Amino acid sequence: MKIAILGGTGSIGEGFAVRWSGKHEISVCSREADRAVKAADEYTMALLEKGLVCCGITGCTNEVGIKDVDVVVLSVPYQGVVELLKSLAPCFKDQIVISLVVPMEKNKWFKYSPPKQGSAALEIKDILPKSVKVVSAYHNISAKKLAIPDLVLDYDVVVCGDDEDAKKVVMELTKEIKNLRPLDGGDLGCSSMIESLTPFLINLAIRNRLSDLGVKFL
Amino acid sequence: MKIAILGGTGSIGEGFAVRWSGKHEISVCSREADRAVKAADEYTMALLEKGLVCCGITGCTNEVGIKDVDVVVLSVPYQGVVELLKSLAPCFKDQIVISLVVPMEKNKWFKYSPPKQGSAALEIKDILPKSVKVVSAYHNISAKKLAIPDLVLDYDVVVCGDDEDAKKVVMELTKEIKNLRPLDGGDLGCSSMIESLTPFLINLAIRNRLSDLGVKFL
Image (cartoon, rainbow over all chains, first blue to last red; front, side, top):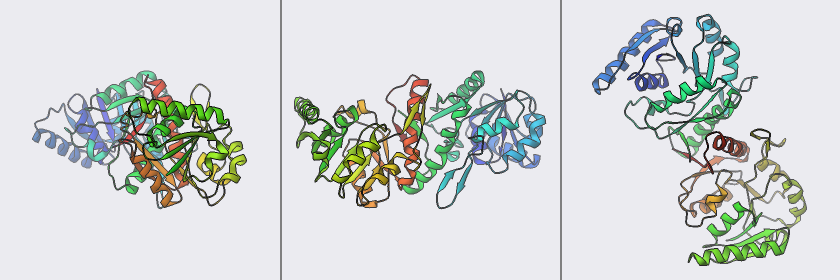
């Protein structure tokens, strides 16, 4: 498959690029092509140094990256995502868009602060063309751990979405990352629960002096 | 310590009785003394048959059980809890009250439906005398698994409360149940998050054909 990673120069973006590059063509996307190309080269070098297979990681602008891909990973902060997607909306056709976006505020502690639609995923669905299939997933995976390509991740990934086929694609992509277990979290209306887990996990980590917490249901 | 279990004849109540009876005096409480005594005898017999130590499990009415105990476990359904606690409020002094209560509705799926205070724990705090210390915990532990006294429970228990000493007592009680790890979840205002995990876990279990799900943060 062809996968474009928006926010691909950030740490969680790096994780997906290195994890999926063994089987898929990856476009690392950024507002600036130079930064994207530089990041793509770095990820490729890191994989080659580890002796890992890489089908190709290229860097490009968001506009170029989105076109003609199967999956777009939206690994960008909530702040600015609405503006970004409105400007990119004409580039979308019928891609699967995976939203990792979590709207949260920080005072002393982190707090989930969803938009009026009820979750970031639903807000994103509202902005993009109706033919785009939004799937919500990977909110609670440590960027640091994901970016280590051979580290086994013994976590669960709850996947929400209204399009069952798109959800299945994301669940299969999840299984390709060693030991991640995808779980069906229901439709996109259920996304608020998994989005809200993120500030909860961050607070829990701070309070209990833990770090990079993920979750496992057993 | 002396521990009274309200809703002690139900499955999650049974679990706490058999798990803590090795070190503490347990009162299994019910509206009807007969039912409570019968349940207490059954739990004691089951422990003795397994050759496990038991400091004493007795059965009594809610009113009798609450008096002169250190800890009251509130393992009752949300429906009716307000009425129950209003009637029992005069029996409370300065006990630690552990709320396992989860307000939820069921249509096709389970949905968290907190009262106006924001969570069941905050509503319960409002009803009881100010000297009572409400702690919120154990919402996501399987009743079935807890009731098997020698089964290792490799789960996390997030504990919320406004009184740090009371929270510590509950965290120590948690450690007495093999492999449960207590985690500090913050003040009682944070209880809504752990309460809302319960309907989420039930839905997740149904959707993915799993059962008795607990949670582990790692």
